[in-house]
Image (tube, rainbow, N blue to C red; front, side, top):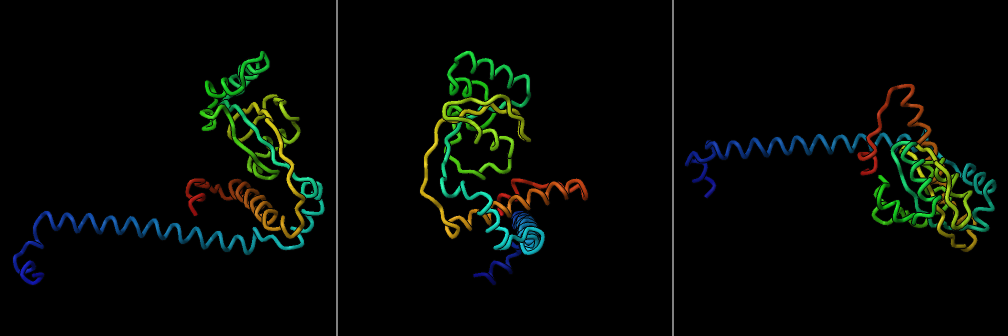
Length: 212
């Protein structure tokens, strides 16, 4: 049947030639994307073995310096309202201080995806928000039910409320080691990115990175 089809000349038809052209283009695009992902993964692997390397001594040092976080660990529940500018954040803070419902204000004006949940961002442990350190630092200073002032981070201006906290069982070094390793590695990566941006004008595609 294939021989008959070839002899018929149908393979030279405009439709078949266009389909083949489209197919080759799709394959080329897929190869480009595959190559890009492959190169990025290999580069990140090399970085982890060199610039981002975290050894056991680093993990033990961090554990000892933050032992209270592991002997009496807690998770906190929080909500926030995000504004793109300080003037907007000041208006939000006035409304909340005047007694307006925090969740209601968040739904109305927050630019964060959590707005639809009344600003609720759920439960988190120390280090979970290390990529926005100003936010994390302020959150862990708050008492349950307390609302922060305006907190500026790289993504905007926040009003934060601590909703509550849950006490967790003590974590031994062995139990905490993997989590600490990830945290320290991310710290090193964030520092490397900032340094590279200044020295080499490197731009990081956060969506591409998250997909790896």
